[in-house]
Length: 79
Image (cartoon, rainbow, N blue to C red; front, side):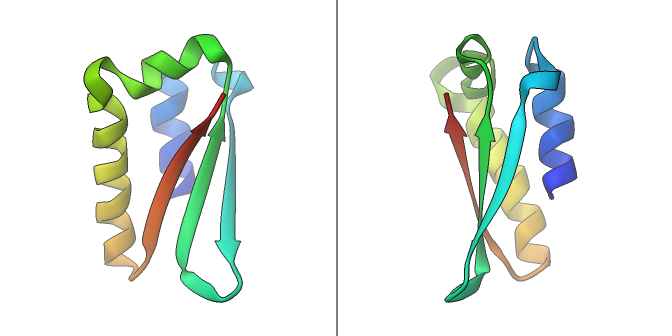
């Protein structure tokens, strides 16, 4: 799933080399995973999209993949 995020976000932003994705897992709930994506402030609107449609689509695809593996996934954008 992390590779998927790198691929999608890397193709949407202007500076793909400056995108950092971190996977955070809580020890008490291993089935819940949070991905933190850090990037330039100028690239954040490209990921969010008009009305938030782009980020919603990315999250929907990520959740569909996670459900196949029995996981819950969250994606947070850090500026």
